[in-house]
Length: 56
View (cartoon, rainbow, N blue to C red):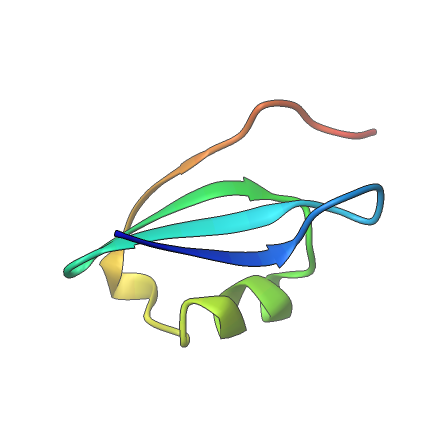
């Protein structure tokens, strides 16, 4: 399993867990363009996204 970190901290959080052909996103607190770059724009491999909280 590979863990890719796009951002962590007060400016946002985003992690991608990659296992074979599956990608699980953890948090999505960064602009979509940054998140997509982290997963090499392979949205068809995303099997889910877990969010712990939201901001207003």
